[in-house]
Amino acid sequence: MYQGFYELTSGLLTQRRNLNVIAANMANIETPGYKSDTQSDSTFQEQMLIRTGRTDKSARKNLAVTTPIVMADETTTNYSQGTLKETGNVLDAAISGKGFFRIGRPDGTEQYTRNGQFSLTDDGTLVLSDLGNVLDENGNPIHLADENFTISEDGTITDSGERKIAKLGLADFEDYSALHREDNGLYSTDNERIAVPADTKILQKQVEQANVDMTAEMTSMMTAQRALQSAAQMLKMYDGVLSHACNDVGRL
Image (cartoon, rainbow, N blue to C red):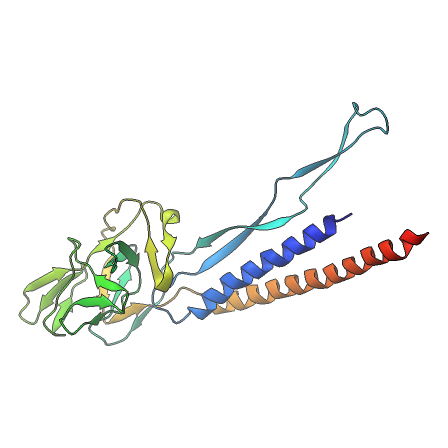
């Protein structure tokens, strides 16, 4: 009797979560290095409907298989390369290919990002906004005397006299599904780092834009909104039918 409530309510909750994922993608379309998420839906374990006799319950006959409740299964991240944009800022760097910049967080942990929009502190430390220090290949903070430096394609930082200052620390992973999204475009994982592929390049004065497809997100948003509105309207009608059955038909 109440199966319709379960189906419609689960649809409402699932579409609301889907809209939250879409909204996050659209809100970060201007965030350098942002990777878009996609929600996939599933159902609770399938329920077998059977028929038995009124008195003899031993003879069962399978009628159908139903999946009465939909649910948000998982959110997957699309790690494909975003478009590279020229900025002219010597502190900006973009990764062309696989890999992540290594960031030393204030709590001592190491996290990873594709956002190469760096800046310098007053003491010359290369940082990612207020999120942490940019680490070199040995896991140490990078210190620069000024902005007169060059970053080569392998991540080596040299001064105006072509003397090596440091090399940007890069990391890659076998299994990207083990990466956990943190705030501000950072990722964390307990998996061991591996070397980035040989064809990965660092491009100075560029940033990687978010790989969000606004047209696709708008389409998904409208589809989810219509599904949510339809479920809400049907839930209201279903409630009216049950109310009528209890209050009016029940009197007969």
